[in-house]
Image (cartoon, rainbow, N blue to C red; front, side):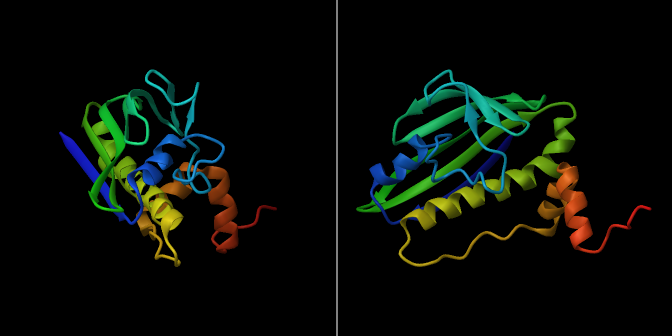
Length: 177
């Protein structure tokens, strides 16, 4: 069983942080880091049963408590069996924990793809989202998550067109004649 947890302490009211969950996949989404990652999309507004995902990761909304929590059940990639979701919890007046938890089993090729690729990309994406949440309520600039060399390499490998452009900029590509 895989359990992967990321969390951030944010100085704001529960309802304010909870509104970030409510805005997922919307035009004004302040949580999902869509500028650097495939956008999160659903076939309808957030509610139980809505189907969607981001990039090759597909899921449906299994439970949703507005401004409190949302849980998604994986439908793809093949071999991802479980859930992931976000929840807010007040830990003191105007201090909130925003937590993302992934709980799943992996079967078949996912036993390799999770530890070699998806886990690293997942961790980077979730940390980027938590950076956005924290920055949304911060009064001063914050340190941002830095992607590891492995994450940068995986992103290049998974995005062939961008990889060619980046390689050319880095002087790693040879010119064709």
